[in-house]
Every structure is written in structure tokens, then in C-alpha cells.
Image (cartoon, rainbow, N blue to C red; front, side):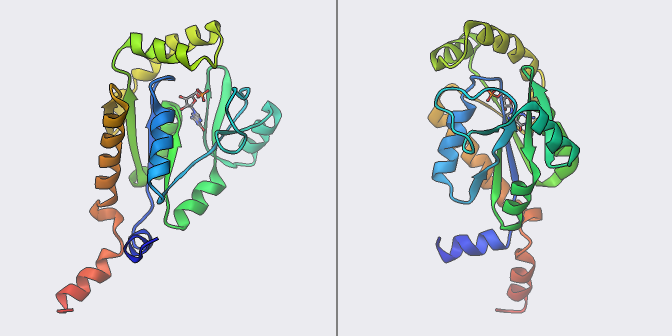
Length: 216
Ligand code: 5GP
């Protein structure tokens, strides 16, 4: 890491970047690309009671847990937020988020609108939320089908849920339309870049500006 990056990371409050979208709008692709290109960003890995899909890894995509263990996590207050989505529970483990923020990292969350509302209540100013829209309903259905990870029944269920998820778009700070993945990624990166420069996050500037004003 260059000295500039290190200084920047240490003198700025970490932010929590939330990406939400209906299932199949390309959020996973965008998240992976962001994480690959940006070493200051770490992913929050959720716990879920749903079954693992082919190609998914324990601890990378999710922590796959039994309902009884998910309940224990709730009761022990180990989740920062949680919600029921498509008949399964999904939640954000609290400890890794607190650790990453205290180390000056920014954290990326792939969570639904219910989780975003909970984080907004708890973490207000640290939260930056982006809603990703598909360019059309047909494109969404095509992506769900070509993903080929779910049964026809699950795909139909996800399509009917999409409209409900989309109805929450106004609750987000930003909305991007994923017509072209490169353009969508560029827009998300621009949002992140600008949000990192927000005055209120840049605690290190207080000293810097004092020194400037003293003539250094
Ligand atoms: P999938 O089963 O396709 O991986 O995810 C289904 C939905 O659950 C997605 O909209 C995803 O953003 C959401 N989700 C995943 N993890 C969490 C979480 O920890 N909390 C909440 N509230 N939603 C989540």
C-alpha cells in the first residue's frame, strides 16, 4: 500500500456501502469487480439459512447455517441486521463489520431493503446506499434463467418478488441502471470515490488544515 493510501485510510472514517437490487440485476458481478479493484474495500459475508448453490463457497459467499444456529445468533445479538427473504433468513454478523471499520476499511454489503433500513437507523451517516435496477423486466428474467442455479419455481418466485424489492428504490441515496456492466461499475466507483471525499468523514483534515493555517 502506498503511503498516500495508508494516510487516507487512517485519517478517514470507514463507510458502509450497501448495494441492493432485485435478484438477478447483476449485483454480485458488480460487487466482485469492486472488491477486486479496490483494496480498501472488504465484503461483509452474511449468514443465511438457505441452501448453498453450485459454485458458492462457505465463508466467501455466505456462512450457511441451520435455522437453530441463526436463532442463536439473533438471541446473542450477534447480527447487525437480519431479514427474512424468500422464506429464508439472512443476516449480517456484527463482529467482522466492527473490526473492519475500526481498521479504517470500507465495507461492502449485499443486502435487501429490509436490512438497509435497519443499517440506516443504526449507522446513519456511515451508510451509503445504492440501488441497482435492471434495464427491463425481460433482461432480469433472462439473467435469472441463464444463471441456471435455481429451479423454475424459484425463478418464478424471484420474479414476483422483484417488483416488491424495486418499490423501495426511493429509500436509497443513489440509483444506477445496470444496462451495461462496465458502465454500471464505473458509476458505482464514482459514487464511492466522491463519498470517500465527503468533509464529514475526513477526520484527519482537522489537523491538516490547522497546520496549513499555521503556515506549514
Ligand atoms: P440470494 O439468495 O440471491 O443470495 O439473496 C437473496 C437476497 O437476500 C438478496 O436480495 C440479497 O441482497 C439479500 N441478502 C443477502 N444477505 C443478506 C443479509 O445479510 N441481510 C439482508 N437483509 N439481506 C441479505
